[in-house]
Length: 287
Image (tube, rainbow, N blue to C red; front, side, top):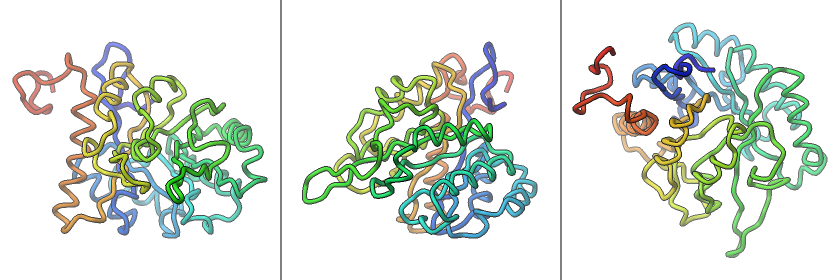
């Protein structure tokens, strides 16, 4: 459990991480710098072709230098990272090892593509076996259908939706939910204690693209979902995973990342813990 979130009887404060994907095409060092500047609680590292994202000693050096932990390792199971770390199960095993080495809490993985038939055939049980063997929480992310000529095509196995699948842990991504036209609040409520991680973002629901809009800039019930997590004192990490590639300047990118963090803070602060008279949190009584 994150120290940020406390225990029963203590004020709830969500643990919010900044994903390295939010600064793409910049890298891991720039993500740490932004996270420290803006007041994030940790960093989520998406393992890519960038060598620093793969090397535990370099990641530990960044943790030490910035005095900011890594909470999450996102395994290289994306379509664009298929050449990173070799075979599919090797990716997950190496991600679990890296998670232990850097002191992180959870591994995020995508479900297999349907053409990865051998990998997909025992994916649900295989994830559980690796998790139990390593003691690392492996959390399978919700995805979305691809649309070809106006028709939905399921390219993930056993399915793009983790609902109804026998995963111990699930990562919920609001942008993916928008593309899949799913109700995130209903899904999070259904998942209950199996919710292992959250990717904070949004989507319009009007495109086949994975948009990763800023939270509150799309159609998903993001605020309501965060409020539900706070009400249930959910003990997990909220990873901000927004696209800033369209920002026109460093200042605008920083503003977007600050807005995303503020959104997470505002909607995970229970009413009884909110500062009175609109005072900033650090000026609240006893703060």
